[in-house]
Image (cartoon, rainbow, N blue to C red; front, side, top):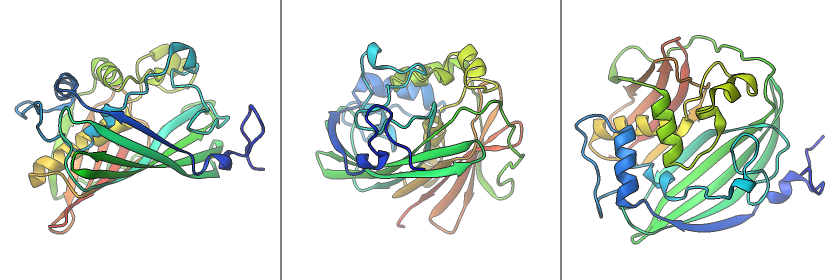
Length: 288
């Protein structure tokens, strides 16, 4: 039976077609904080007017809602632009991006977002809802990024189920980087993104309410780390980048970034926990 919005009984599919436009930028001070949090030693920090590294547009639009508008999990309360799906857990499931022009540090950016899909499915924990949002970002040079974001809503599982071991590629790696993970890293990343989702910094909440064994490593953080390695390998950002969350990663396990070349102009990548499972998979490709 299709889910309806809890407050008025309207079908969630009524949200398809909703659009919002917001403006933002990544000022030099924020670029410095992102670099201090994510960059490997020796990589330069972009300054005013420099090209914004790929995916850093995510930090231009912090969800600055009032405290009264936060849900119990620290996320902005359901409803508004996104549909009020009546499930307790939400995650960034996947994303696909096309890069058309560079954005720059301090540049004004306009983002137009449109809900293009609301789909109900059944998984191992019961029902789930996928909401698809299409974003277009424009800067001084015009269209810069087209992005499709998939958000999944699902019930909180009564217990944590360890994932099957699947370490991803181990041969012919073009990069194999150990990434330290700590509570400080997760706190800094939450602060930069103005993300109060408690699974990233409130250990009692993560364990006792959402039944995770530890603090959850942000999916976009992992995507950023893989993008940085892909850009360093090729010497420039890719033209297209895709990623998908496979399983949550936690603060008390080591994290490895791995990449394998696919042909002359593409990479397949993943993050891997010390426990032997993949957290996030990604691909990057270049026109030439």
